[in-house]
Length: 115
Length: 112
Image 1 (cartoon, one colour):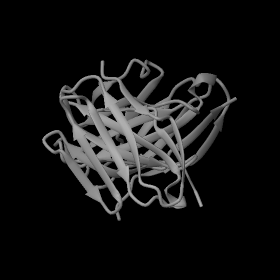
Image 2 (spheres, chains in turn red, purple):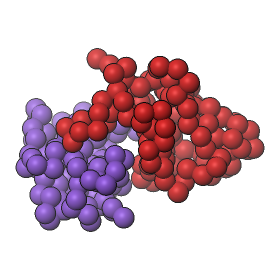
Image 3 (cartoon, rainbow over the protein chains, first blue to last red):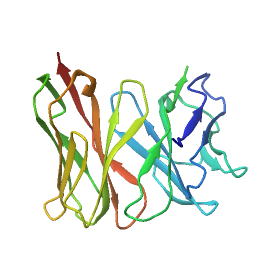
Image 4 (tube, rainbow over the protein chains, first blue to last red):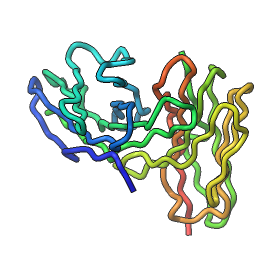
């Protein structure tokens, strides 16, 4: 069964360093997302991406964050200068289309720890 | 701004019980509602999706209902099993966008 895959599963980085989280969405999907979940808190929306551009972003997604779809399969989230409060589980998701009958499928997540 | 709330936050039941998890949302102009399961430290597994025009969806022992006008959804789990122990999340997509807004989840423990 097709699935969203994320790498790495766990990343430890020093404060101030840049990190890139990688995702391979399901191959025929058109809508891509990043969400994060700080330990013990709700899953929060960061950004959505459609037709090679950002379609929506939250107030969390500031200038320190960027997304790219560098080729036909990968979707990346970059954090330029990590802060302690960026420590969280980051989830990538994809949907086949924008219709109300299309499910969102999530990856297993990347646990980011900033020290 | 859409707010999604799930009650109870935690629930512990003996094996075999039927149970209901609740989800409420403040803006009824939703596109669809999705229920997910999350095991500790893991990703989100989609369980059921209900379109805004639908009243319920069923998958095996799971049944989800939607009352859009009152801003409520329930997830009914029949004959619960220890393997059902997990956190259950509901999430909505609003008409105005394509992002999911999540509730805080219900942490379910089913005791053998």
